[in-house]
Length: 358
Image 1 (cartoon, one colour):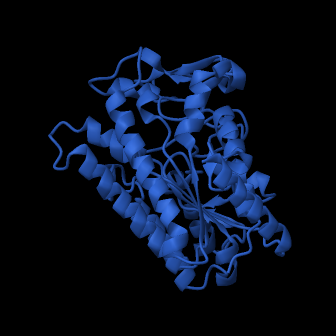
Image 2 (cartoon, rainbow, N blue to C red):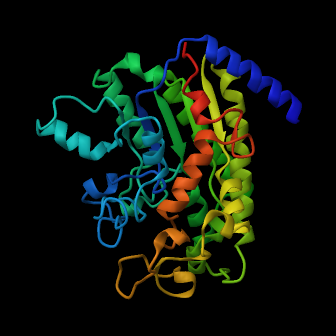
Image 3 (cartoon, rainbow, N blue to C red):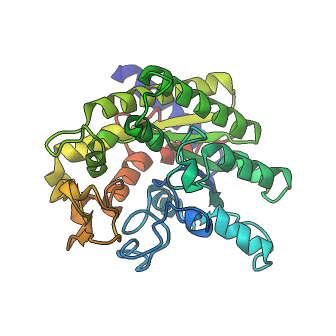
């Protein structure tokens, strides 16, 4: 398998160097809390929030709505590209509506909503913004000419979502209507619709990131079968099936949409490598959350009554019961930006951005 990939990479590098560089100057991001920079904070009806201390303590030095102690993967990728961080759509919408800005940001927009999923009903009672409505928000900006349409093919589109759907599937008190395989297939179908629609709106450089090993997060202790000494195998099996479907979808994009380029970020593998070799990545603890309470600090949200906080968050793989620390996000971002095929394929983000769009 290595030789064909090396030949492909060599030909691609020749193509890229021969082409005039057409670097993306904007990022449009869609997903859940792994990407959300604070959209939920600006949605006052939403109950999935991280706009209170100690969230944000290590970089912004205040809560921003991000579910970690600092920056997210999207933030690091923007910095690698030399861009300012993308604003939450809800913040930009408010500023545009009240006249404090005359146009939407030219460096892109982040539509992600913590707690949301690819299934519309996931955590609907929290008043989150599902991926379908995030797409509508982007679509409305395009149709109203509030985004420069000529920049869209040059922009980087990032997608990550699905963990909340699978977590809730296993948390359900009543027997689900679909078996695990059927449920995952239904999720993949929704992602396929999303990709089709953003392509119709002009997206040509698309990065779809896999889910991490959600069965290993400290919040597994909220589930009836959660154990402190092992990951939840049932959940990780569903995660891996979903990730496999995502990669198949990515591989089909250039064939289905000529002129479009897509990459698959193997976040599951990246994080499992951190867990297997924590010392190599400067982690003191790859099991417990830095902030929370209960077994693994996985029963109480960071910042809520009774929470406990570690002294050095970036030596922990997990910041809170669901989410990685800024250090973890930084390592993931570097792997996605410049990593090899075991981390992101068929090419990395840095190479993807140097492809001339058509």
